[in-house]
Length: 332
Length: 282
Image (cartoon, rainbow over all chains, first blue to last red; front, top):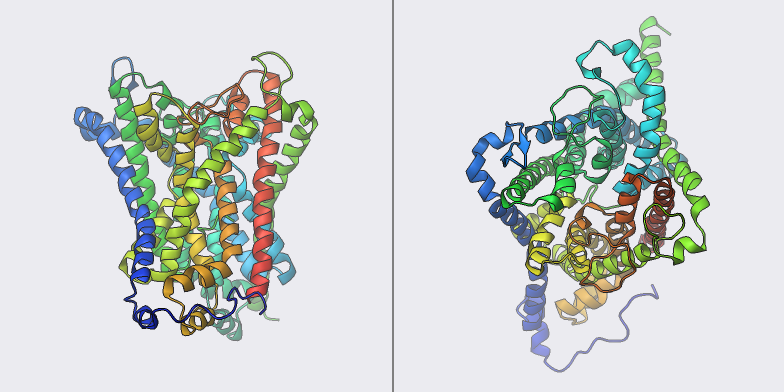
């Protein structure tokens, strides 16, 4: 304990009364300190209000002009000044859905492996590798997707897929590369580490008495996981998945580079699509008229409100299991 | 073994196997991305890459010196703005965060951590770029700072909470006022952890592109003026990877490798430091 930062005796005398005040929490310097810290803390609620306010106020012209039909109209015509965000909203939801479909089994497997099955020496290294995935910048994923993933899909995945399932509505049209499929897969790779990390912490919070009870009743390892561990952590696991959904909804760069950026609604995975974040990235600096800009602000507003709502739900579910701890909010 | 027991054990084995295979797939993606980055990027890393600015489109050669310096400036400024606010908020959460306000701030920090960064870019554009009629590095820094704050608040809180309670009590018992206890004893003990948190935050915003698209904008020339548009590695990669030239693609891979290396080195250092600290605290 030589590293304790208390050197010698703290200054005692001048003003012995104030030390009493300090203990009672009525010391003036203490109050100032608290006020300053409170100021910093209030920056966060202020931030969320400012973001909401800015987006809303700037979206007002578009809100007034197009009303609620903005979300179900699919014309996006900057020349005629008619804007409807349906294609990007649908594209955002579809790409995130595809991503979840792929990512959830992978991420939950990692979490279960790391908490239940893996030998102890393997847990840290694998957890570390998965966390490294979370540290890769979005634009690097995008680059990899453009030059590696898309050629790979074109050569080795789409042809056999079309040969077998080509009759379904999900695989119609010609595959040029940039598509819902490419965007969904890159999103999946990107959200696996988030879902895995949070699920892992949720499963770690499950008391071992749950597992032991199941095993003592004669359950196999898998039965113990399925009937005791997973149900106990269910709310938290759902929270983790929703958190992943929140990330996928707002992910910008990699999706912009891969999804094709076309204002069109199609449920075919092979067709280009659009997302709200991609629309902002592509068009915001090109918006020449004030109505165009306002429409984009409204897209931003919808996107922000959507992700805030999704994240809030996720947090509430996760907090129910791992109470108050900063699960998954660490970058690494 | 009865038939039933046999099936139950078989299911258990199969599920375990499935989980191992799926986990391997998830880790495999990482290994794939890393090897591709190194294979396609490493060959372009030469002296010119680090010391020269880009040459006009279509020509061969040139480097990304402007982007490397730009990343340093934009991210450094962001840290300068974001770290005090984030750490301050984190200290509040650790010291006074048990009430309603603390709960709310914690919740908002967690929620903000997951919101799309491009929205923050738009807000920074509204406040800085629109009134000044000019894209600028400082606008990008503000956007990145905003992204850092919620992250830092939560990591700082966690690190400060790791400090044993007895230490705080000892300082108070010796007559230290609360603020001095908080700053000189508690925060100083947790300093390593707080610095680590800041480093991780810096590493994460260093890779951000979306909030810089309409703030720092990008710049093909070398500049250190923070009121001018500035290039960062992330913006450079975006332009080069989506551009039409082979030469650009080569530079995009190399820049991606450099950015990745930068982010990883900072994150790994941070992680290593935390390990050391955790070892000494527990």
